[in-house]
Image (tube, rainbow over all chains, first blue to last red; front, side):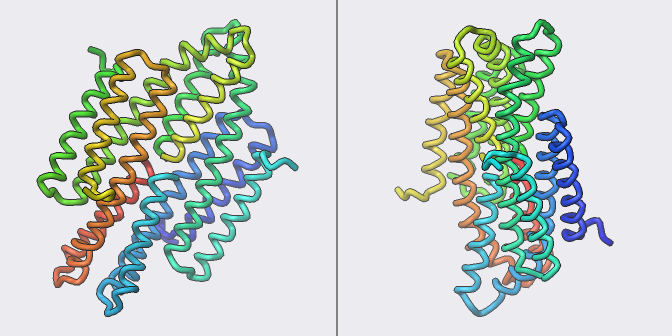
Length: 89
Length: 89
Length: 89
Length: 89
């Protein structure tokens, strides 16, 4: 089980999120809950980075080297879109 | 069950996150997974906002009106901290 | 001139931004320009935090302790709004 | 002068930032200043997106199609880095 495995990380984050739900159910202090939600978000960002890394090193190389200009444009546009959303979320 | 109930929203987000885990397990397209992770983060931001709203309208008012300057400082400092983290996550 | 003076920091950031403009004018490498823009944003976040800190320790205390419930609500709502925007920008 | 010209946009943002400096000098309301800083950041994000778009459609295609695996790795790694920073700033 690799440290860098996105699936394993997401499962850990799911456990983290269940912990946050339990905090809310037990009326934990608001700020502590917000801090844990922010920690979950930071962990999700890390996973997105790992998945993007895999994507760049596989699909993106294939599409850019490929013969289909429309497919190449599509793949590059998707990267731009997730970047723009990342800058906002 | 209110639309604005943070607990209910977090449970919905947990279901969303489980869906993302399933996508990864079924080798969904990388960019689609990243988009769903970003959607989960946007939903978590919304929950943080709702919890902060409750906090401002209860604990913060109590602490600021209260007689204990150290407690007031603590509560205001916490708000600053979650703001600074929000600007980063 | 204090390290924590938002005005001084903003002036420094303005100089930083002028440097980024110069980079673009001189056709600097795209990624280097993006990195500098991200550095400017991180510096702006820091200034927002400093201004919010001053605001919490002055206007917010005054409004929350004050006799006007509408004014108190307005001030607390504003904090929520800048938090929500911070979580997005 | 194109709407999508990053240089022109950055110059407009510089004017915006000078306006924010003037607000601080004239003791504008804290929250209004923070809102303007957040607007500057949103505009900077937009510029980063435009520059990344140009970069993907030029350097990235060249590097990925090129014969140098180290150069290709470097270019893909840079995209990952600006994505990860974007998710944080």
